[in-house]
Length: 210
Ligand SMILES: N[C@@H](CCC(=O)N[C@@H](CS)C(=O)NCC(=O)O)C(=O)O
Image 1 (cartoon, rainbow, N blue to C red):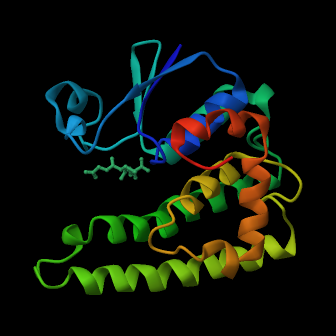
Image 2: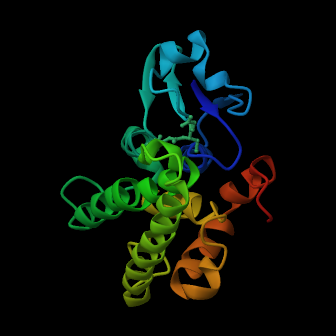
């Protein structure tokens, strides 16, 4: 039994998609960031970084970091085919894109949403956000080009955890509201993920239009 500490349209979305794709028994426990629940002593015991998501397995093992949770779930449920098997050459691409999304693209969203954490200059937050928006456009542009060479998914016609991660980040629309009109291959990938029955089931809870 999995427990996912979660919030709507947050970094918990990709893990939530994978749990649904797997059909794994799970419960969602909502952590309300606006009321600082992620900083409560109870939650910090699970995730001392004060971030969502956190996954708890059978009330015992705890994993934080959305990409790590995705990798873990895909490996623990190979029958769901959310990752190429070890030894499959496509496994390298799967690692590449998931790590790129979490390590290169996602930090720019965090700079945009939490600019005060990226400068000691109280007047510098606009510049941090502006730089983050520029970076986001450039990184998405390169991803779009790669998806245009294959697609609709990162591994061609084979859905994997990377695509759930793309869908999550593509739905953080405030810094780059014209994402889908600028990057049609990103849109094609997000549309393909969004049309999957497992994803359709969880869109309303995440406040994302079906
Ligand atoms: N690298 C972490 C980032 C998680 C993250 O920043 N989550 C946001 C919600 S989308 C959060 O908990 N923000 C609260 C805060 O940073 O104070 C992951 O991917 O799990």
